[in-house]
Image 1 (cartoon, one colour):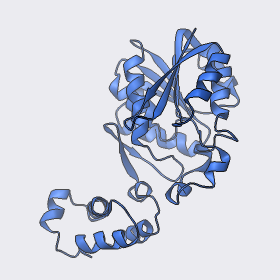
Image 2 (cartoon, one colour; image 1 turned 120 degrees about the vertical axis):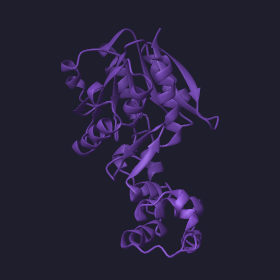
Image 3 (cartoon, helix red, strand yellow; image 1 turned 135 degrees about the horizontal axis):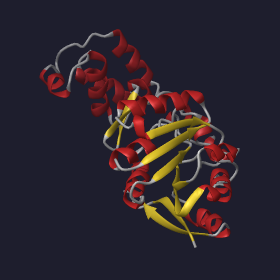
Image 4 (tube, helix red, strand yellow; image 1 turned 90 degrees about the vertical axis):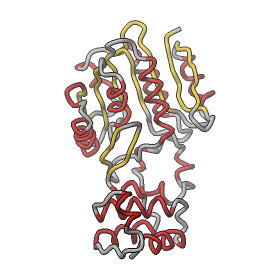
Length: 273
C-alpha cells in the first residue's frame, strides 16, 4: 500500500494522528527513514510485517507495542505488553528528579516497569546511581536491557520485589530519594478506560479502590530507608494532589506539588517536616 492509502486506512479506523502513525509504521517495518519515505510516498510498500501491524493498529492495538520501542525524554525504550507505555506527563517526574536530587545521589525507583524513570534520570544526572524495582521478572529484564541500551547499566541495580513487602530494602541500604510512578487509577475507573489503555498491564494501572494504595504503602513504610534529609518523588493523578498531601502530612512529610505541561497536578515532592 502507498503512504496515502495507509493514512486513509488509519483515518477510517478512527486513528487521530493517522499521517504521523502511517509514517512511523512504514519506516519501522520497511526499514527506511522519513526522508526516504517522502521521496517514495506514491510507491507501494510491500511487507508482511507492515500488513500485520496495520491490522493491529486499525483494531486500536497501541502503536507503541506494535513498534516495540518508544521515545521518552531523550532515550529510546524497548516496551512490551508487560510494561506500561511511557508518557510525556511522566517526563515531568524525571525532570523534577534531575533538578532536585543532591550531588552524587543514590535513589531507588519503585514500580519501575520499563525503567524509563530511573534510566532517563540517570542519563540527565551522570553523577547519580540508582536501584530499580518491579514485582514482575519480565519487566525487570526489560528494564535491564533498556539500561544497557541507554548507557547507564553500570549505574543501575535491578531487583524483583513487592513494594507491599518492604523487607527487601534491608539488603539495599538507604537512599537519598525514593521515586515512583506507581499504579494510581481506581479499580472502578479501570473499567471505563478507553480501548487502547485496556491493552496495558492492569497491575501497572490499578491503585486500589481509591487509587491511593501504593502512596499509602510507600509513604508510611519506606521513610526509614531514606538518608537524613532524604525525599520522595511521585507521579500522581491530576485529581490526587490533596489526597497524597494528606497522606504525606499524616506521616510527617511536607508535600509540594508540581504541574505537568498541560497545567495538571502531576508530581508530589515529599520532604521531612
